[in-house]
Length: 198
Image (cartoon, rainbow, N blue to C red):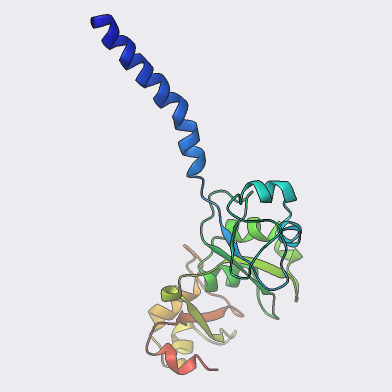
């Protein structure tokens, strides 16, 4: 009886050990891309620098020959990044730093998604991939800090709270804003509403 019980426990332990990797694999976090008009799995694979078969294998829920606008595609190769990927074309004055601030993105995430290793590779018209920011935390661009202004003076001129302006415009643990930095303010703020159509 004792041996039977020990054998049963041993079998349970072996089964638990075998099933653990499968469970962990199924919980891998991947970002998603929403299919747009004209997209094919091949064009999506090309856009993100992924082997087509790897993309197909990561999306067994999708018929590769029958994509529909709005389908959500898992993008392999970016494990650990969670959310919906969106893209923008770089505009004059935009930098890696202020793109990260405006979209609440981590600089490493921004670099990985866009496969850009240096800020010198960022030029007008470059397509940059971002994780769609939380709409509740979205920011709007109000102005650019001039060389003759302090953040407090800029806030006074814009009619916004200087501390909120400073926190919304800084990246991570930076202590200072410098001339040329874009000043951001939370979109959800009542004060920001007056600027949203500018």
